[in-house]
Length: 103
View 1 (cartoon, one colour):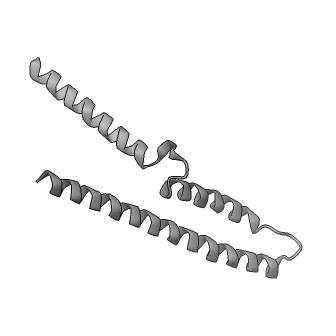
View 2 (spheres, helix red, strand yellow):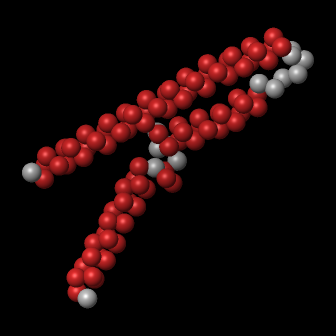
View 3 (tube, helix red, strand yellow):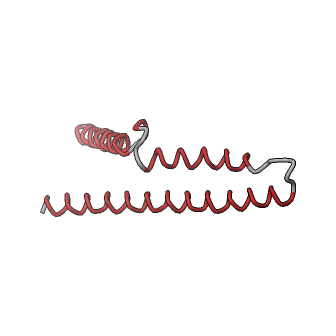
């Protein structure tokens, strides 16, 4: 029975990871398409004044952070951190329940 639960948990985590990666690629695709359009619009409407790089830079920072989270490039708040925090909170809850039973 325990093995089945572990398999289900592994499947859930793998599925979540795939959904996260899929979401990142959707974000990246939107970034490229929209910013390409903004570049073309900028060149057509005001070729002497370049403003397209502001949304390119702002959204690019967001895409970079998204990539760091999805691909665990910076492990400060990565999957391992989430798992440790979940276990920590579950352990505290167990300790509180045990304490309440003895009182």
